[in-house]
Image (cartoon, rainbow, N blue to C red):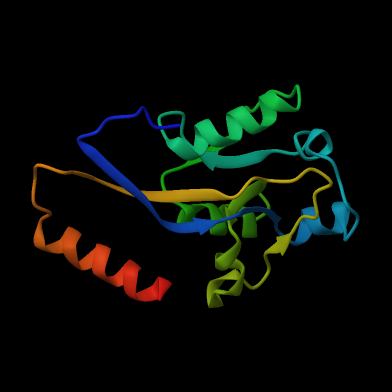
Amino acid sequence: PMASNPEIIAGVIACFKGVPTCGEAYHKLIGDKEISLAELSSYPVVSFGKNTSTYEFYFRLFEKHGLEFNPDIEAATADQIIPLVKHNLGVGFVPESFLRDKGCEGIYPVKLKDDIPTRHILLAKKRSRALTLPAKKLEQMRLEEKS
């Protein structure tokens, strides 16, 4: 949670859910059965590095279930997770919308018994400072999408 600061205005500009995914080899092992987060953690995990909010999110999620989150492979972007998962190097969490992208053939969602909370992307700005032109454009695009 963000600390209260009267100088800062923050609003949600997007929401998404992370989905655990795997390649063909792990799909043959897991199949379409629903597994727990504990069972998932027994497989190699592909994730973002330690200094990211995504790592922190999954670290806390696993911790909440009494599990250790210790990725075997760290990627810099979600786009890098997909080929690692596709080549059966582990199970990786990607935004649900990625599963509809063209490059995701050979990637299978893993059904979890445990719920993965929705994540929010916030746009924060100072009341006393004008937004840069790109930031204004982003804010305008997001407002248009919501209406």
